[in-house]
Length: 204
Image (cartoon, helix red, strand yellow):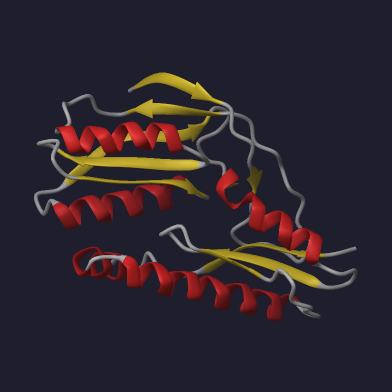
């Protein structure tokens, strides 16, 4: 395993089982960690170069051992989610199996859960739109979908969670429709479209 590039990324911690009031923690920079070093086929290598340019938050790049099939992502809240998604996509294209090729991790702690830059716009809109005394929430899925309660007026933590998941489910359905049948079925089998609340707060 070798570290060969470091990039500065601003992100925020999010909480998987959040109380109504959550303090945010700012993360530092990230590093691209190469796990394997076998040669990729030309098209797979082009996707790998794009992956390195787009990295944000937790990200994962999986490849088949012959280097022809890949699955990758960026901007995930947890490394486990990034790995699960990339592995599922890669193995849908290569039944023989895929292995981790490269990951993007925080330099400070690999155990952090983070809201990456790709979702900051939605997060900031959520914080701005909440009214004093009202609740807000954000939900995500493993395929990169997100749902928030922005512009909604919600009096309880339960209603905020319900609305966030509802909008995340809509994002899941949109992603599902865009995928080719083999990737859609593989994603559904691995439960990549299931949404869960990762952040919840009460505006003071």
